[in-house]
Amino acid sequence: MTTTLYWISGSPFAWRAMLVLEHKGIKYESQRLDASKEEQKTAEFLAINPRGKVPALRDKDTTIYESLAIMEYLERIKPEPNLFGSSASESAAVKQCICELDNYTLRALMGIVQPVLFTDGTQALPDMKDAIVESHREFQFMEDRLASSDYLASDRLTAADFAFVPALEYVLRAADKQQISEDGFGFSPLGERYPNIAAWQGRMSTIPALAKAYPPHWRD
Image (cartoon, rainbow, N blue to C red; front, top):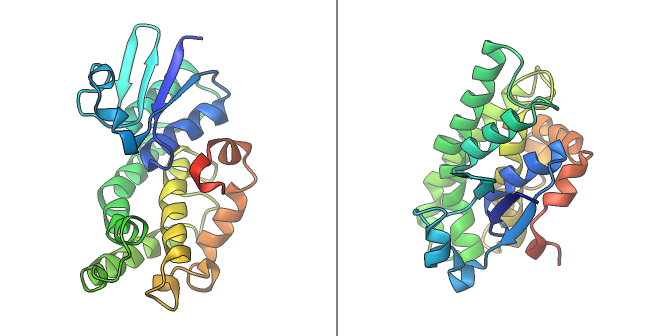
């Protein structure tokens, strides 16, 4: 086996790369790193990704990091099923959606997720208000987009949908685990405020890759 994915359980960026690997049926060796031991900061891993972050992919003599680059590389080496568009406009729509997720949605959501999942959240609540407002603004973009399409960037499944899965699951996990908001920051139950996103989540849940790539440490 020549393809190796380096990942950390729960990393939203590693998660999306693994979703593409699984969905395309690409055989790969899994190299899970332990963030608590800072294995992504070892000299061995820094030789693979000098930024010390996951995911990273090795395929024969090629080494790649950054999730979007990895997803596009996988698309090139195994074009089917197509996840990045069959036309210039569709390809642009997919990449535009992923860029929006990375630059706006995930940035806002981390303002909720990190205090809840990595601290008790109580001291951070005043500072979370802006992140909550911005997160709902981003989710409304997704909700409106899904009003006229079953998927985010096209009328079919694309890499943009796989990029959104970890973001959604992260904020829902935070909403479920927190004890400082009666309504889960407005995200739980998801279908009350965002019925289109909830319906999309239901469609995505039927894709086998999601179960295969689900973070192992979240299964308990």
